[in-house]
Image (tube, rainbow, N blue to C red; front, top):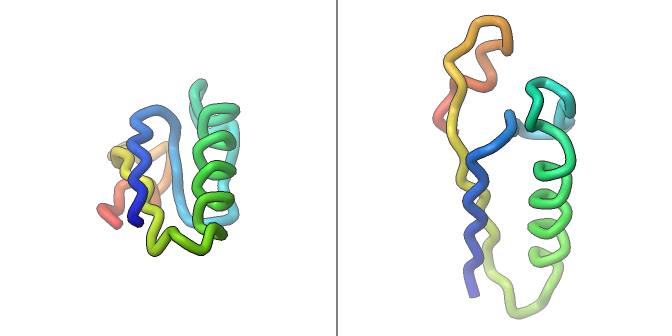
Length: 68
């Protein structure tokens, strides 16, 4: 089974995740990451993907403008 989370709010990057980068980078992002990590441990799950948007904002840093 493959699972996809679509999370359009918050700035998400590879770990370590920087909470508080924007007003909506907090509880929602923590929830999505926690759910994805728990699902990835299930034996019937092959892949868990989180799809989000990028932020082309110099004040946030170049890492948030990367497509992958």
